[in-house]
Image 1 (tube, helix red, strand yellow):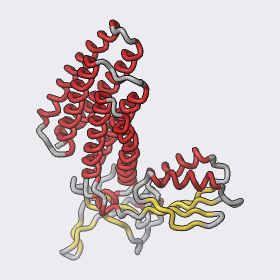
Image 2 (tube, rainbow, N blue to C red):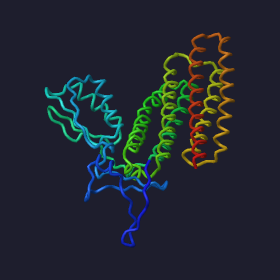
Image 3 (cartoon, one colour):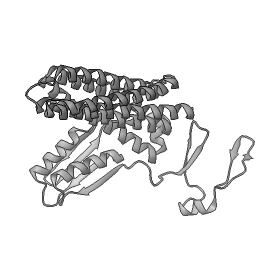
Image 4 (cartoon, rainbow, N blue to C red):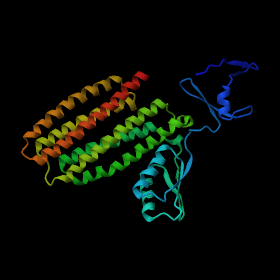
Length: 333
């Protein structure tokens, strides 16, 4: 780190000198234009007018050798790292399978649309302005959907409702789309300070929302897993197992909901500590319920119940992870 003394120039302007080695490395001399970005934490970032490492704008990708599954992952990755425009080229002409793969990929991404199609080119563009994106509100919606999915999945098990279970499974795509949006803008904020300003939150805030969203996305995955068990058995579980599942599932959702309030709604940090205590209590209750399964007369039912108990336990652990980030947020503030 280098220090510079602030000088008063002309009686109205404060000036500092730039390190010569840095200026020469970036091609800066007299008359060059640089960008100054003031941050809320008191720092001032100096960048070249077109600094390297800022949010990527556009790229062109040759997809000639890409299999459909690989192409889906590639389009998703290009979206998540922050490209605004992606041109997919295939000199020999892309196949129907490749075109379908691209369509499937962008269907799961907010704002990414196909704006040009030719025999050899597919051009994709993000149509959402970062200034219109609210990462906190997106994460709040993630919480709402994930917990709703979890509640419905438990009810689908207890009521043996296959139609409800199917709706839970279908909603997981909505959660994935929301979390992809959070991930995209968090990644962009790491490389472009202007993006941080556009989003209206500090980098610390954005990380905490991203981390919370990641836990909620995992909870939705377990809700989908629980719902899938409804179709695994022709007959519902016994009444005593269903009662345990309903009670434990409700407790796990309460842990997640309370923990998320600390991060997303600035609830008191004591709420986070209490959710950690509740997690420990629930973990002990699930361990006791698991042990009772050894004496169950229906091995298949015991196996399914054990998997459901495990998903409920993991849900509470993800809630505890959110509580811990809430405590860190409190200490940071």
